[in-house]
Image (tube, rainbow, N blue to C red; front, side):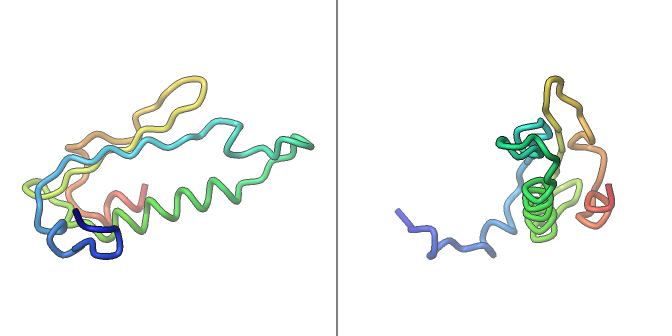
Length: 93
């Protein structure tokens, strides 16, 4: 078994996959618990991580397809697996 630091990103880039990102958009990610003030730092960290990850994938109809769902008190599909076929298109959302 490989440890994380031995992970071969190039090998994964050539694999086919359907990847759905499910992001927490609830108050627990946005509001600081002690004073209930809005703090979007964690939201931006999570969003930037997903953008970076999407940018590293070979997104296309025949390679990696991606989807995005937000959840809070309700869930919202932002885009389906067949909505975008380049990383740049998906990142613009």
